[in-house]
Length: 202
Image (cartoon, rainbow, N blue to C red; front, side):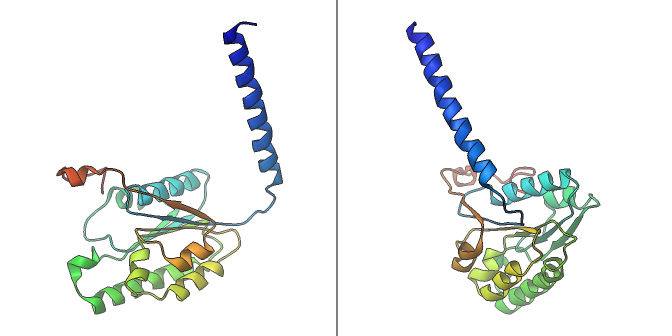
């Protein structure tokens, strides 16, 4: 056997072992229920990932809903796209960034109004997937009580999936989430003076 043939045989054995392990893990996963996905961190891509998962779900004929906290003073590409679809309910808080309003009372009231849109959705088994985009800002600044949010998430319909995004690691959300990904910034064009552009940042 040549060195090339030996390497190929070794690779095949390694891949067969990996295949057996993965198939065993798939076979052992028996529970069928909705999950809470928590995407946080200072890197770009949290909302992009969340909307990608939403699109995947809609592609399977699922019913979705979006509540966007923070964003809303300008039209985003995702808002323009998803609002055109018949199987997505879409709500935007509409105040822009918290540092723009500089008004705690106004921000709290806006957060509560947006949350009031989310509550009935989190009780409705007709919605398969709900995205609470940028909600961690509301929790970090105490515009919404963390316990109120986590209780609603935990009491949602059994098969309902929820995606939560935002910059901050909120302990209460970390505790209840099923899948957690931290998106870290390594490098960002904005920090090099590159202007935010349609289709990339919004």
